[in-house]
Amino acid sequence: MPCFICETCGTQYAPSATPPERCPVCEDERQYVGWNGQTWTTHEQLAQRYRLRIEEDAGLLGIGLPTDFAIPQRALLLPTDAGNLLWECVSLVTDEAVVALRARGGVDRIVISHPHFYTSMVEWSEALGGVPILLHETDREWVQHPSDRIEFWSGERLSLSDDVTLINVGGHFDGSTALHWKRGPHEGGALFPGDALQVVFDRRHVTFMYSYPNYIPMKTRDVRTMRERLRGLEFEDVYGYTWKRNILGGGRKAVDASFDRYLGAVMEVG
Image (cartoon, rainbow, N blue to C red; front, side):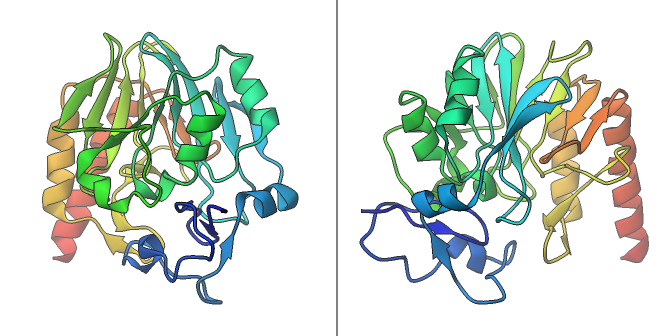
């Protein structure tokens, strides 16, 4: 049986003979049902329509779909002291991408920031040899393709190694996770926040939204909680959720300034 994929958010569902009746991910107020109604594709159909973009993004191997399908995030291969981590996922898995990853040592674990990027995580795991998938437990309800490969972690922080820490920053989703890489990929370290903190187009700031497509601001208490949970972490770079949306150099100062700017603007309006 096929595993149907939502064409609007890119989430892959458990095997079924017919498409699901609805996509709870898209019906949630943080996302939206496509303007032509709920539509579905399969992995095989997706492979016929698209070829993955596989190229470097600020010194890391990136993998992504063209921007006219679903949410245009890209996955990144992080060669850390905690192993090779595939940060985020996309809906399409191809032999070409698997070969590119294996040429760089393969993948030891998949780590995903939040449910909008779960996509075809189980299919990716199987293609990479059954590697574990690490998700925060408070977002368990959003998993649409259950698997023994999925491992849930809990709490505010999880250390994967001396260099790599996961931080439950919340805000966008309760389990929204940022990854802090202390000594990589460049000098000074980096923060990978998914879109809990989204790098904006000027690439000098980040912003904080509960819903990006529906323009719902994040609650100020959640932004303050996020600031506290990131306090004390040093990083020069911030890797955004999609191609070239990165702050390279001065990342810590940019994030701190963005917290102040956002809270000041929201409080003034309120």
